[in-house]
Image (tube, helix red, strand yellow):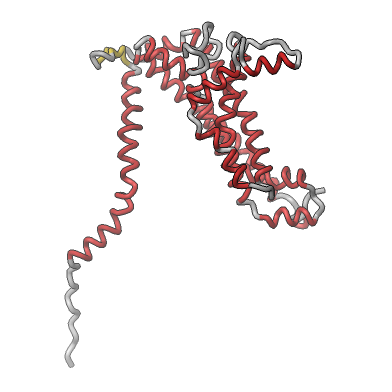
Length: 328
């Protein structure tokens, strides 16, 4: 009785090996352009500014002397830094909170069955695609102290002129208005997309239970929007703390006002770097701003996630018999 011997395994041909390597490497090759560009225009400047921030840097010679944390200590010891930090947070709060409320309200209206939905949805995005410099120039003239449209309208209703440029708080309101004009539509479309992803069955069940539109909004829409609201809040925080275009173009000088009324951190950084030509201090200020944004962003993330987690836990503890019905 003869025993069959197993045939030796055939070596994979070149085409098979190429197909195998193509299957393994092609995904990384497709995404490699992003990472290469990020290393060149992202990671390298970050690392470069980190090195410069510890040096007394001479931009002309492209070299400097290592001085440790002296640049950071100098920036933190300047009264103008704390004024800029206060102005930044003031403008951020005056813009982010009304912007978020307006975006949710507009998205709720656009989510309804109204005429010309596509027109209105595209219309809210127009301010976002406008050039920031153009928006800043238009609004800076609208909020002019003597001949601005806003003061003219206030005079028509018997209200005295507001010093939009000399008064710090008034200038913050004017700059926050520019920010709200540009970014409310962008956040509106993000929230609108999240609203449209909510199953319509929830609203139909709520209607059967006798809940009105307002009750449905607070009981169904807002809880469902919380993950998206986390994203909007964090991105608004990052962008709001780095505001530059609007305060830079608010007057013809771009220095933040005669008494630093609307000087922000990024504008102060610009003035140090290109006004004083001290790139070591500017780099140190940039890293201080990065740490501030990082801390505030992490706090926002922790707080908002805790709220979402707490709401989910409360929903899980509700009695089963109440599920599927609107609370009275």
